[in-house]
Amino acid sequence: MSDKPTILVGRKLPPAVEARLARDYNAILNTDDTLYTSEQLIELSAQVDAILPCHSEHLSADVIGKLSDRVKAIANFSVGYDHVDIEAAKARGIIVTNTPDVLSDATAETAILLMLGAARRGSEGDRMVRAQAWRDWSPSFMVGTQVTGKRFGVIGMGRVGRVTAARARGFDMDIHYYNRSRLSGDLEAGATFHDNVDSLLASADVLSIHCPATAETKGLLNAERIALLPDGAVVINTSRGGVVDDDALINALKSGKIFAVGLDVFNGEPSNIHPGYRELDNVFLLPHIGSATKETRVGMGYRALDNLDAIFAGKEPGDRVA
Ligand code: 8YV
Image 1 (cartoon, rainbow, N blue to C red):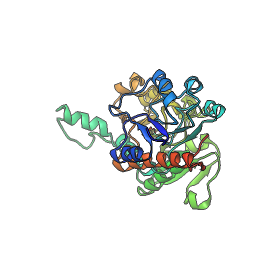
Image 2 (tube, protein in one colour):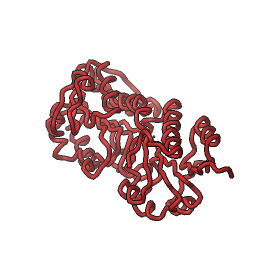
Image 3 (spheres, rainbow, N blue to C red):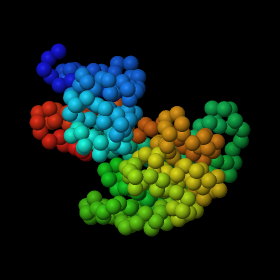
C-alpha cells in the first residue's frame, strides 16, 4: 500500500475512470458490481479515506453516524444526492460532492425520448408489433398527441431543465417554467416564468419535472395539482420518483385527465415500483437510465475524481454540496 488515499468505489465504473482511480489512489473497486449493504459500507469504511457512491448506495443518517472517523469525503457519482443524509454528513465533518453539468445533455435526451414515447404511444406500439398483435391499420389507429408548437412546462429550471427546454424549442414548443428564483434573461432565453407551481401547471401541455427530491418536493405532483393541468396533458419525469404521488398519477391516467406519462424514475425503484403502472397502456417507462450514455458515465466519473483530487490536495472541491 502506498500513502495514496484509499477510496471505496460503490459500483463498477467505466474502465477509463477505474484506470484513473487505480493510478491516483488505492482504489477498492467493485469488480463484480454487487450492491454493498449498509453493514458492508460501515465495515469497509475503516479502511478508506473517502467513498465514491452511486445513488444506489443509501447513506442514511444511521449509516453515516457509524462510518469510521477515517472517512473524509463522500464524492457522489450522481448529480442528485438525496441518497445521502447531508445534515448527518455535515455533523460528522464529511465533505459531500456531486457531479452536475456532465449529465445534463444525456438526461435531456432521455426527457425528450420520454415526451415523444409517451405522446406518440411508443411502448404500446412496440409491444403490439412484438406480440404479433398488429392486425390492421386505419386513420384512427394508434393516434397520439402532437407536441410540436405546444407549451412545455418545466418544474426546476436548473442545468438539466434548461437543456431539456432548449431541446423542446426544437419542436417549436413555448417554454414555461417554475423555479424557486427567476433566471436571468440570458438563461431564460424567452421562457415564461411562473412564480408558483400551480400557475405553471395550468400552462403545461407537456410537464417535465427536473427539481431535486427534498422534503419540500415530496409528492409535489398530487391530485390537486394534477387537476390544474390542461386536460390531456403529458407528464414526464427524469428527476426522482418521490416528487410524484403515484396513486394520483395513475388515477389521472385511467380517467384520461392525463393523456400519457413518460417516467425514468420511480418511488420504490428498482424492484418495488407501483404495480399500477404496469397495467396501463398510456405509460412509457424506462429503468432510470437518464444519464446512461458511455460519454456521460466517463464524464461523471472524472467529475467525481476531480472533486476527490481537490479534497486530497487540501483545496475546495468544485461541486461541494456539504
Ligand atoms: C445517475 C441520477 O445515473 O445523477 C443522478 O442523480 O439520477 C442518474 O442520472 C445515478 O444517480 C448514478 O448514481
